[in-house]
Image (tube, rainbow, N blue to C red; front, side, top):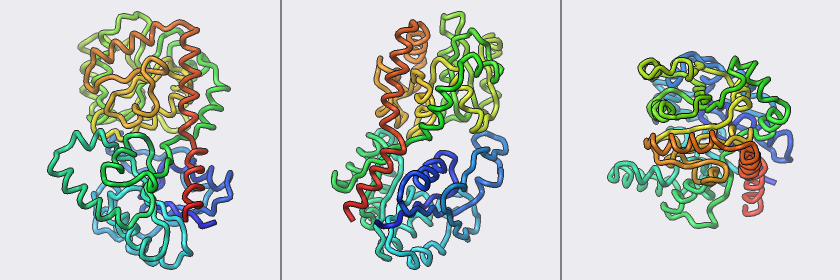
Length: 392
């Protein structure tokens, strides 16, 4: 069996549990290569507007290697040349023939790895999250040139690992056949979240999080930035008629002053809670405490892993039609609702529909959410990796 190498820009809180799972639960010889360690240092997160240092282990439980970043402006936030790790070429030529999985093409090192990996005899796989629906929303001329460039880069790849339906359509639009496509869904640590869900009483969670015990809690979780459209949920919530409804917005960011002004103008101070940044270890409390989850993001929300997290707590999920995950995880009227991005009237209707569900309906929704998200787990990713092994 060929070893597997993942190339990531930096340690990511959503990916680390996957690597730990592969290392501990499978016989796959795994190594993860990183181009930067800045996520380990507690630097300023531009989206949250505060210093962020994740409180879950990011490089424990699996083998990892850091390649020196020799960029003139080293940062994952400095564009294409922010990661320039020429050492990746030497690394790949020294490794035995492996399955190399490169996450995306956003930085110079990604391109070097894809080309060098192919020339060095590795089985090169590209895993990215670009959804076709969002490609169609972008400038046509720019997108045409980008796709020409990608068609060339894709010549050096053997397989394309798609994370969901829209991502698969993106690869197909660039000429990739079914034989070249492997399903490796975008997933979170389902087992961890499911265990917390099963062992956490909703009212205990609310008490620990400092939330009202009897309210109908609508949960938003994400940065307060334009891409996430947090003002949309505020505008929709301001018109919700249910007197027991409360909106809890987990996160922080540059739009906070505008959001606070809206809350003040509409006398929502006793109905809306802006939590500030909440770290990974405490996030599950808010899912356990909630009744409904909302993601109202626009262009740039290529998936939205918070939806996966919420579904592991059996929550109904109300998601905008721009989010990549809405096409995979949300079944209208079954475990949630998809609404037109920016249409706050539709969002209001969805909120009121699910707030008014009775206990029997809520139990059925919970069951369906859990069933759907079970198909987007680490198990399916490992099955995809094994499928590549068979074909090489």
